[in-house]
Length: 244
Image (cartoon, rainbow, N blue to C red; front, side):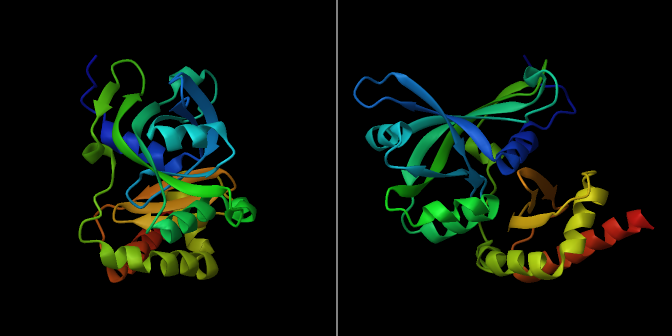
């Protein structure tokens, strides 16, 4: 099956990775190698790769520690027949957080604030899934396999932006919630809500109201804090123009 000309599989896969807050995690049972599947909460790394917070007491964690190979099913949770919505099966290796633990924790808690209660538990750890590929199904004629470089965000040269992200997210949530609401309602067509920023990267901004997540793509790539501020002001202007 071949995708239709107007279909951008990489963009759709990126969007699913950024917007998904739950997924079905498949691991291999330690010892037997039998398949095991469980429901997990997740967030995304700045490059889009999934972040997990899981307990050492869980079967899936013991499986990962014995064999790092995993797969993760994410879907749009579309109304009606769930098989009519887009979904991806991402394959990769789950790695326990080490040097980047602070980053993973911050982004995960931005997406799941209630998980703050578990972070200090000794048996809970952050894991990042390093993708090796993904299988996207988005309807008839829209089934395609993608390589990591086709659905992950290139962070090359964006060190300044990543360093500024924490402050930028805090600033947007403290002083510019009105702009967040305009992005959601006027640029993305979402309903009014308590929209807040959960993260940013060179390609876009992540927003959330409860467990509903949105992705605002930037028209151009940004790689530093100054460019990010200019982009957010520009998009706010575009959103306000739609109000007028």
